[in-house]
Image 1 (cartoon, rainbow, N blue to C red):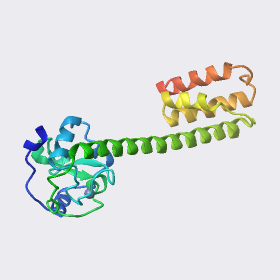
Image 2 (cartoon, rainbow, N blue to C red):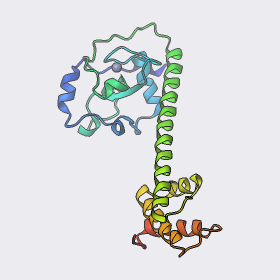
Image 3 (cartoon, rainbow, N blue to C red):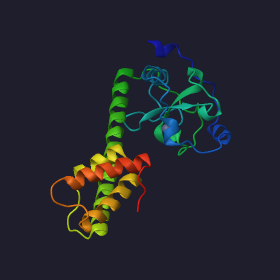
Image 4 (tube, rainbow, N blue to C red):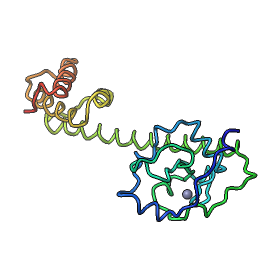
Length: 215
Ligand SMILES: [Zn+2]
């Protein structure tokens, strides 16, 4: 197993590391797209799938990699610069010293690896659910905006607004909705058929290209 040959970085104190940082760790920083999955799991195996700050393991926590010397300060992906950390500890919510936890050498690594996969998938699904709820909320707000601007008692169906939000920013869609709602409300464009839908898509595209300014 390749993970067994990796050497862990020397013991250092969490508070020292935090003092080196200008700002708290952001979620974006900790996603570490540059670290391959195989290297990630090599480090996890080396550390027996244990958060080296608090000693917790999946599925109680989702494990991540922590750069001892932060990426923002030029720290790289050398195994000596990487330690296993749980989501909370990686964001500075816990303040235990690195090295306080001694991973159990008899850990069932394959079992823990599967537990980690499950914990990651669960978090991914939770993030997806949060995103979907936020998206539905935005769709409802845009539909309410349409009704307010047009004075009509109907609005574009969910899938129409959702399709626009896939292609353009919320600001662009909002401007397009406002613009077209007024035109449909005043009868400038017919609300019958689907001509207004095609018009709405054209206006959104033009606004995203900056060729149409909101009224
Ligand atoms: Zn932890």
